[in-house]
Amino acid sequence: MTTLSAPQLLAAHVRAVLGDGPFAPVGGWTHMGAVICDVSFQARRKYQSTIRPRLLRLQSAWPDAVTVRGFQARLATEDLAVAMDFNSPGRVATAHALTDLLAARGVDTRDDLHEWLDRQENRAALRAVKGVGPKSVDYIGNLVGRSQVAVDVHLRAFAAAAGVPDLAYEELRTAYEVAAALLGHEPGALEHAVWRFKAQAG
View 1 (tube, one colour):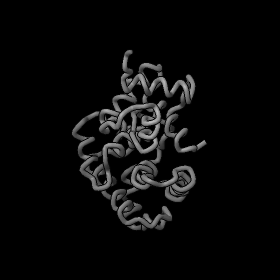
View 2 (cartoon, one colour):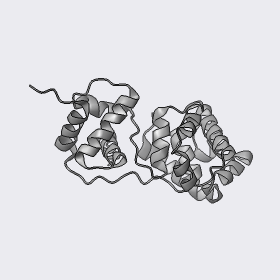
View 3 (spheres, helix red, strand yellow):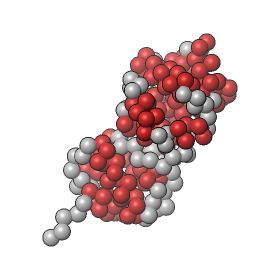
């Protein structure tokens, strides 16, 4: 009896549970303040009810923060915890640190960040920011229109239900990428479909 690989197990489970698609990728943001706050604040929070409404309000309240430099200027004079209505000093500090890093590297717009993430040393620079792990680096890519797999608790739970053994982050990300190729889906679109299913985001 042939033992199925992790990507084959994932692909079979996707077909059984989610069907054949097509799956729409996450839209992300063009407003860089929203991108930075999304990746900084979303971990372990209900996204649709807690994070997304705050990001929409931030875009309306801080239209000039559409660029990294505009967001940095706002942070110099206003309290992000108040603007986000989110009392978490650690997450606020992460947003400030990400903003300063991107500004220092000349990354100002969504397109800038999309291109900047092509280089491994830039991804490593993001990882050096406190509060930013490998999932956050992949997630921020999806927020600016890249098609990546950001492995979180929902994707791990889906993989476990598929019979995939507990894998290291990079191994499970690769398994999802190969499964996406087997099924003919974009990696980011498959990831988002799995995330929505497990998070019951609607």
